[in-house]
Each structure stands twice: as structure tokens, then as C-alpha cells.
Image 1 (cartoon, rainbow, N blue to C red):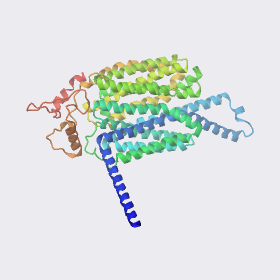
Image 2 (cartoon, rainbow, N blue to C red; image 1 turned 90 degrees about the vertical axis):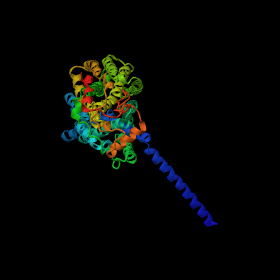
Image 3 (cartoon, rainbow, N blue to C red; image 1 turned 30 degrees about the horizontal axis):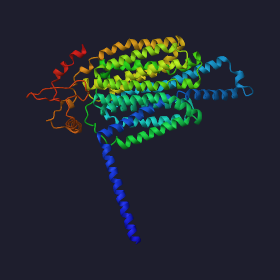
Image 4 (cartoon, rainbow, N blue to C red; image 1 turned 90 degrees about the horizontal axis):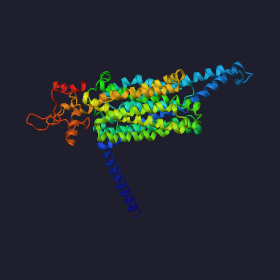
Length: 531
């Protein structure tokens, strides 16, 4: 009887194990499906972007207070050594106190800017590296560096270590941000899908930037300096493990035979890409310049409390998401007006910047800050997919360098913000700073008229996949992948987008959407765009 029961239990266990194995196999097969892969990649990239922007902004309420405590401890230690029988308050003059405050402001400004400065320096190299090795390994490198920089932040106890951790974060961001955005552009080839996916990524960027200050401030107040950084480090570790598990960057070498991407210096001299890069820099200047200066202005003009200064940017998250949603919907219906959405966003940013100094209460201030973030959402959501489309039709569809250039545009604004904005406010005033930023945005908006005919461009014939036809034998893994993709789609539209169909008639009068013309005819097709 016992033997029969044991045999029955063994069979039942074997059946359950078999069912579990079958379900695991089905799950693995489902994860290998292109749609599921793209969604998982989008989740991984969005979490990486969320982390990077939370790390960038989480120090806003923490570092000034923490550095002030460090400065006070050092002053007390020096005072005890020199004047052991007197109190520090009786000997420190007002001039010394002002000098210490100015020194602290400089330290905070340099610390905030160090991340963007190093990111600015590394991006040209990271873009080229991404073009050569693909997107997955640089993303893993970026997450790894961000994890270690966050851990260093958590346990740092002096300014030098904090500065090192902040700079290390810039190194990680140069790889993670650029490779993540480029990976989205690579996986979502249809223009409408690409705009939607990049819009989701921008929403995560916005959420990370705007929710990080209250997140950091609350945890710092009740749990200490280390806890917010440890939480972010754990999330970064989980995202890296998910990347290793799903994408398997060291075994998935599907991009070995891809064409070599266009060098970043050639992209920089492309007039269309240069206009987009300039717009991304200019539209982010108000946000980058107001973040380090608005708290002091609120305290001096409207006597705001600490919680008001910490929460002033949080309501702007909702109009930012609304701007992303509206732009994605409009771009799917009217893709030829991407330039107009960007120009409109810059005008809104300019008008909102000019109205900030007129606000007298916290409630009044919310409106122009929401306007700035709404305008930034319009510009970013319209122009980031445009960069990928420009690379598709004018260069080679490898996106590392072009999104490194976009990251450089952001870094220029955020590297100048903490250092330049304070000097402008000190020398000219807060009102002049905002009027200048608003005027620059409004004056730059007409430059986007150069992009009005971008949607009419024909694809570049420099790419190998545009030279493939259905009758050709594929050479290498990349050609095989492109041929399989075409057999699955059988559409008459270019992979760059849905603006115009690529129509070519062969010798027999048949429709052949992928046969390339000669280099001379392809160059002639770009003639009107350069005029």
C-alpha cells in the first residue's frame, strides 16, 4: 500500500514538474516574440531613464543641507582647536558667515554641474562605441556605473567623495541614456510607434525629475541620507538583472553585420540635425536655469516654506504628460507638422518663462512652471523621433551617435545651469534671467521652419538594407534579419516612417518598393531639401 502511494505521489510530482517545464517553455517562447521583446526592452529602458533622472534630482533637497552640516562640523572642529574656551557663535563674524555661505553655494553649484559636464565630455565617445557594439552592452555598462555611483553617494561622508560619485553618475548616464533612447528608436521602426515609445520614455524622464525632490526630501527627513540612495541602487540592480536575463547582451550578437554608423562630427554639420539639437538645448535652458535659482527667489519674494520650495515642480508633471500624449496623437494624424509642434512648444516656454517673475504667490507660480514643462514636452516628443527619421533618410540607420548628440544638447543646458544661472541672478537679477530665457526660446522657434519639408525626404541609398531586393541572396545575419522582416511586413512604406511611400518601378513595370536607384539619382532627390 505504501509502495502504491509512493508511486502515485512520484507520478503526480513528475506530472506537475512536466507542466511547470511546459509553462516555462511557453513563457520563454512568448518572451522571444518580437512584440514582447520590444515591450520588455521599453520597460528596461524606461526604468533606466527614470533612475538616472531621479539620481540627478534626488540630491536637490539633500545635498545643500548635508553640506551645510559638514561645513558646520568642520568649522566647529577648527574652532575647538584654535579657541578651546569660547563658543563658535561669539567669534564668527558676519563676514566669515557670508564667506562660508558663498563658498557653500559654489560647492553646491559645481557638484550639481559635474554630472552634466562629464556626460558632455563622454557622449561623443559613448555614441561611437554604441554604434560599433550595439545598444545592449552600453546599457548594461551604464546601469552598472550608475549602481556603483549610487552606492558611493549613500556612504559618502565628505565633499570629495560626493563629487566623485556625482561625476561617476555622468559617466553612467552617457552610456545608459544614449543607448536606451537609441535602442527604442532601433526597435520601433514605424514612425507612429516610435513616437509613442519615445513619448513613454519621456514621461518616465519627467516623472523621475519631478518626483525625485519630494521623494529624497521625505526619506532624508525621516530615515537619513543613505536610505533614498540605497532604494535607488536596489532598483538599478533589479533593472540590470532583468537586462541580463531577457536581452542577454553577451550572447545576443545580432548587430555584428550592421553598417557602420555615421560619425558624430558628420551628424553635427548636418543642418537639419543641428537645428534639432539647438532646439533641444534652448528649450531645456529655462528648466536647467530655474532649478538652482528659484528656491532662493521664492524664499526672498514670497517667503515660501521648505515644502513649497520642494513641491513647486511636482504639479508640472501632469501637463508634461499631457503634452507628450497630445504630441503623440497629433503626430500620428499629421506627421508633416512635427516642426510646428516643436515651434509651438518653444513659444509656450518663452511666454511662460517671462511670466515667472510676475508671480507673487505659490499658487500663481504653478501656472508658468506647468507651461514650461508642457512646452518642453511638445518640443522633446516632436523632435526626438525626428532625429531618428533624419538619420534614416539622410545617413545610416544606426542611432548611437545621433542620440549622443541629443544627450549633449541636454547636457549643455544642465552643465551651464547651476554655474551660469547663479551668476546672472547675482549680476543682473532674476527678472532679467527669465526675460532672457523667454526671448531666446521665442526667437529660436522660427528656425524650426527649416524642418517643414523633412517628411518629404526620400530614404538614403547609402544603407546596405536599401540595396537588398527580394531576389537577392542575403549575406550575413543582418541581411537575413532584414529580409525576414520584409517578408513579414510586405508594406510599401519606408522603415523610417509613414510620411511618404517609397515607390520604385522596375524594368518590367512592376512595383518594387526596395530596389535602389543609382547614387547619382539619390543625390538628385535631395536637391530641393538643401535649397
